[in-house]
Length: 402
Image 1 (cartoon, rainbow, N blue to C red):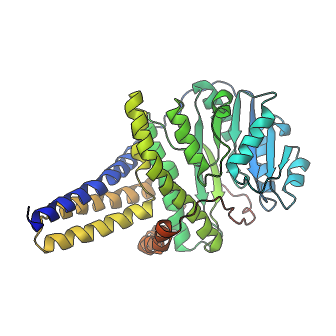
Image 2: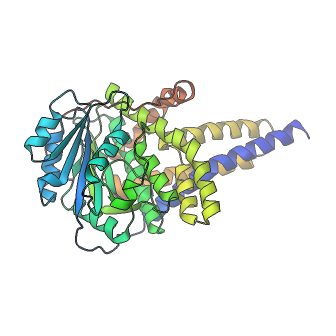
Image 3: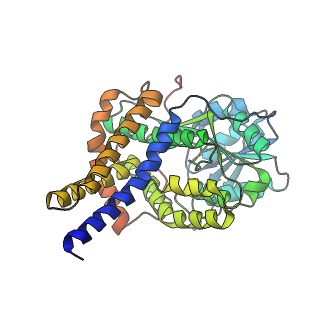
């Protein structure tokens, strides 16, 4: 076999490997553009409790409770787990009427351990549904009852729409980050939902029937514990469902060390989960004859948007160089078309879902945003983040219409 033939095979494999996640991404974004929301009919809200893990959240928890408590029939339906706190988080929550559990364990740190501690407390008198909410987010009116009702009606986990708002005086990179978050947490889950398929859990605003969440393995220091939880439940027969009409928002940390720490945790955790869980999901899909698990595996195989664009660009350059030196132009042509489809998908998603809050001129910062992520992905190869690290908080922005 000649060097040219070997080169063509390598470039062909490269084009196929990159085209698969791009095809999944484009299909999900395209399906999301169709009108209509597949939120099922629900009954009256069931008996539910809200669990809120909190680690040194005194700066933000009051504003979070301002949004949350009016949605609860009684404040003591909220259980705040003050986890290894060194501030007055527990005191603030207790003064607002919440049930407060204080936990101190410096060896077992992280959201998963805190949630397991809270579930142990509820076990003596368990509710029908448990809702998980982070201490630094806003649950818009009606959202808690909506996801609790859907979880009870379907007897499945439910994920609310979780989006990030930009910080005060945002930089262009903040706008691009908010767009990437919107594509990940709204556009792609909505596309899956249009096909009647499950979604990944995205971090807060999640409701679970008691019997399902109680049997889940929560007590771990996984840095993307919510994503892992959703995959574990899906394989066990309880795939999470998306509820777009229930909305929870958070605030992106301003550019700096806090933003860098948060993005590193999110993206390193995503990549580690992709590597370890795509094979697991695929095997389970074959063994159980379940297309929904295969769909989740394909969804998970799509890397973070900036890495997807970066990998496509590198592949296009390699394929173009190979073609220039005498190899086939087909891989280059396939990747060029794939690039156009990525671009059209992002623009369409912004135009339909993000145009109101994300200025169009911020899209010009996308190349710089992608290039700025190179050290983050390089760190994954040489020193990946594997332990839970709390993101530093700033006070929540005063209420505004969302």
